[in-house]
Length: 251
Image (cartoon, rainbow, N blue to C red; front, side):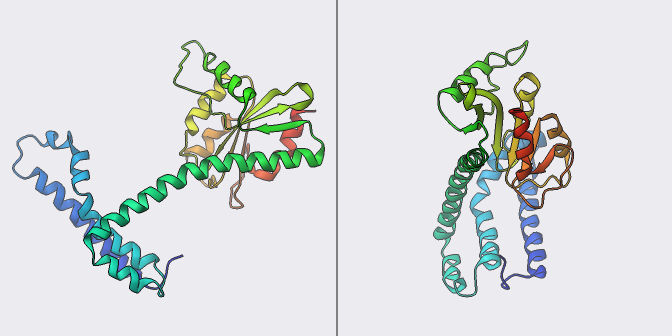
């Protein structure tokens, strides 16, 4: 939660400073060049070489915006140390890069745990599997069934397999469990066009208020959001409503 160390005026000033920094960078790079397009060939290098200077601009803003009044004096000491500023950025990147896969992997496990508890309570002959022979066999089978072109790099997005425990663990649906729709959503939709088995999507943070994904996911057999702010539309529903749809799979 933001604190009172940062206000709208300071945010506007920050935007001006960061804009000027990048404007100056490209202006300096273009200065005297006979072929501007050649600068474009290595814009990634220009961005990379701007890294340390950008950190010095954005880190003080982040600290003032998010640090509490109690810890701000300690953060202020870090801001005065150039080396610690750079290290702080790397530490932040490491945390973020670790959190993303952890959140994604555990989200699928949580969804499976919830479903399995529900199946047990309601005596529904289904089980949600996130690993094992059935899931692995299904993945291998689908690699060779993408269609006429057999696109092997389109691996099936199988986070969870729903099986009928009363039919020798026969797979009856695939669930793609994603924290955000930035994670391979188009791949999931592409696979749904080729597979006969139902493809369901469960997402954590997407609310489907607007945007192209709101229409895109209508191709799937069901979309369920673990988010009370979801804007239900078509096959997009709150997660708890998955119950009625799953019951149809065993009826």
